[in-house]
Amino acid sequence: MVKRFSLFLTLLLATTRLFSNEILIVEGKYQGKNIYILNSFNSNGVGFCIYEVYVNGVRTTDEINSMAFEVDLRTFSFSEQAKVEIKILHKNDCKPKVLNPEDLQPRPTFETKSILISSTGLMTWVTTKESGALPYIIEQYRWNKWVYIGEIEGFGTSGEHSYSFQVTAHSGLNKFRVKQSGLGQSVKYSTEVQYTDPSKALLTFSQSNNSKKISISQPSLFEMYDEYARVVLKGYGTKIDLNTFANGTYWFCFDNQVVKIKK
Image (cartoon, rainbow, N blue to C red; front, side):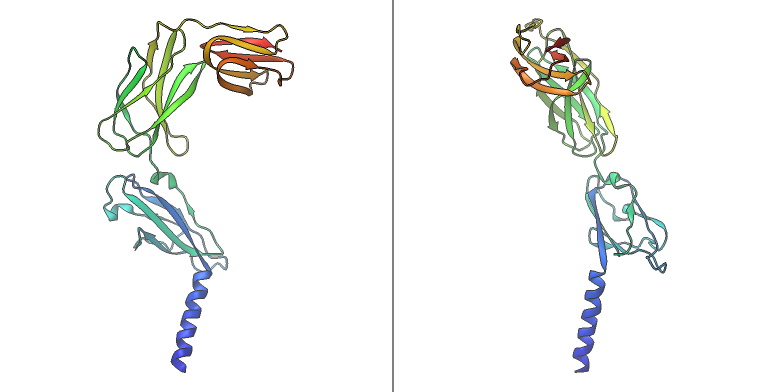
């Protein structure tokens, strides 16, 4: 009877401990950097918030009984881009903070070896030194800004990789580039490449007498901004209906042109 009571009490205490604590999980891939954690005292002021840390299921030997500590990932001999899961076990009346979770996320580190556009508008680029799978964002310079036109997933490894994307030119000189964005403000750009399609003539537009319709001479990307620089319409084609627009001044962007119109 005593043994049964002892076993029940042990299970009860273990269950009580389980539900009185929480787990904070940080996941990503190894980028060659360690992780830093801000600890705190328990709410009663006795002992620290965190009591165990696991990396991929293995309990770490890092000194966690301090206000801040480092999880040393180098001791695990991870290869580049190896999957990492950090479990931080802590009391439920306090909350630790991971100071650099972005260091487990891919960073844009690519270098552009070449970037070209063929006579048919096929854009190709060759890169090296990628350090994580991130999409390449393809951008075209038009209307005095860089505009998103598509994306391709990167390979994410350090070797040499080739990519291609079919672009659509506007009349006159075109400029294109690719970029990768990491967590936060980390962005890296390729060099720009220029291209002119001799078959693309300068487009024109006309507005109906009642100012409620716009026609473009050939299909084109377009955007419309109000007088407060807010985007009110985006699309592709030759016909634009302004019936639902309030009367006022707008900036109409099409082909490689920006014109001021009124409704």
